[in-house]
Image (cartoon, rainbow, N blue to C red; front, side, top):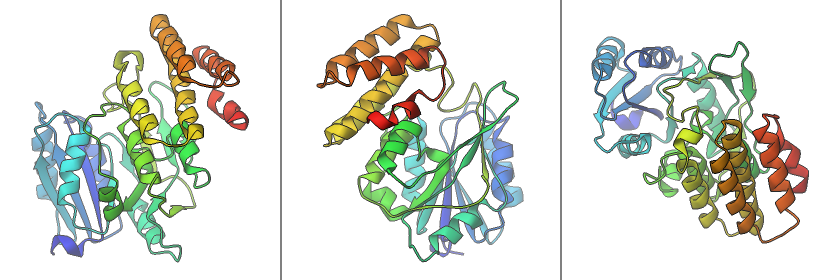
Amino acid sequence: MESTDFPITIVIPVHNRAGIVGDTLRSVESQTYRPLRVIVVDNGSTDDTPAVVEDWKQRAETDTLRIDILTEAQPGATAARNRGLEEVQSEYVMFFDSDDIMHPGHVARAMKGFSSASNPDIVGWDVTIHPIGAAHQYKRKFRTSSPIWHHMIHGNMSTQRYAARTELMRRAGGWNNAIKGWNDLELGIRLLKLHPRLLKLPGASTVDVIQREVSITGTDFSRGAGKWERSLEAISASLSSQRHRRWVRLRMAHLAGLYASEGSAALARDLLAKTLTDEPSRLYRPLFTFTAWLTGHRIRGALTLMRPFF
């Protein structure tokens, strides 16, 4: 089959995932939807990842499951995703991380959404988060109302939570290689600024997000200090609405609280001070300070608590 015969393509960046990528690839192989194309982009792996992926291709590829393996020398998941996007010829594209799991009906569910009468540009779904070292799991919901708020504050369009028309993804400019942290947050804003038609898929979650020490995003915000701020600054610069830029500053205050919760008091103090300085209205500065305090004391729901004021 030609590449154009595949309605949807899944793009997966990989880097040194030899021990875990097999679970992700097998979950893709288990998809009931066909025909399906998968592009795996190796991003300079120095372990056995290329061999694991090649072995999977040799075993799993069929006429209706096309698997292409590409390489990208420029480091970073954004560069790998963009390399994959270059090769996509299908109408729809889904990006997926190399340490997460999709249930067998996941792609079929997404394609059913795209074929619905609402003719969406983006279909989204709830995901199940499996935190490191925690016995419990929790849901992250996809919301179509007030999409910029829910994405800016709750990461509504994180990598594993939606699929999109390929043309829309390209019109937005793809992934920003200059953004090394929260790059899906920055991309999501650019997509939403194009006013896409959104559809939330009903039913139970069909994606498990497995948080690990080696996850792309990481788990220690202080260790990546600077990356998150650059993403938020790029988002703020792209927004014309003062209200929307205030939401970015709220997220900055929350980040300051995360630094405090990790014991990085100096990072927290400096970031909160800058956030307060950048806010032109004195009315909102106490709310930013309170948000940082709540988050720094590991009190959950600080951003949701702020919603009525913003």
